[in-house]
Image 1: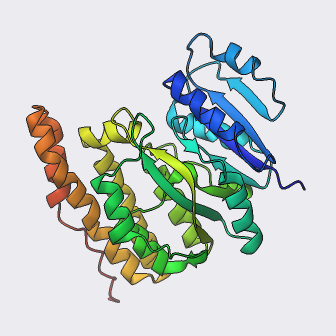
Image 2: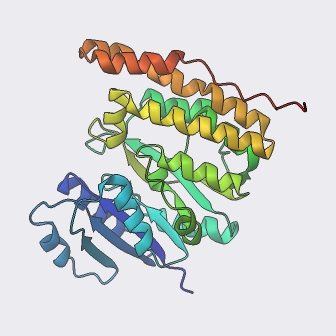
Length: 307
């Protein structure tokens, strides 16, 4: 089967940012890719812009009805045909070396479920940005060494539970596993962590590469940012982590289970957002954030004793 990379772009939002994302794919030094844009919006002029690209490697679909974030991701996975798939953000940018970098990592360390090149964080204008979240990811939580490496098992699970240092839109996935596992319909902003953990529970591995191949855009209009401000992101995260703790216990991954139940990094993140919620007089959000930060860690149920 061809080694063409399926780049799936679930689109909703700013057309200018989306066009920049598409142009970044067109600028790849390795030409063996196919881009599929699945439009979950109804803005005028977008279909006409794609028709004018005149590049057979670019496919464009507009959904008949709005599917929402998870529904559009699921549609993208259905449309993927090639062995490896990227689910790119419609406001992010591939650096020209992205496809070549991922191909080199796959050739050097074949068979992994996930490949993650290094990422540069940019702001809404595309300028390099430094945020507290991304600094913590890089300096406190990341287990990626300064060389290409293969990671997996409980050690990787614990590292990601302490702080998820992966960048989902920059990751390359084995398509067969994406199709088999899919995206949960009860989650919206922690789909990436749920998918990664399911793969690790199955014994799959991640390959990291130190080459910077992707620009990840941080701006306040993103779905995850809006939900974090409201506090709903943390409620969803807590629910997932408690589910994962039970799965880890069943597998005998005791450290991973303890880390999931404590979820210290998400508590700290929520606490740091409380002052902003109070300044904005979002009292309900402040209560949700505070509740997450100080919620008691759930304990595993005690084993039943024979009567």
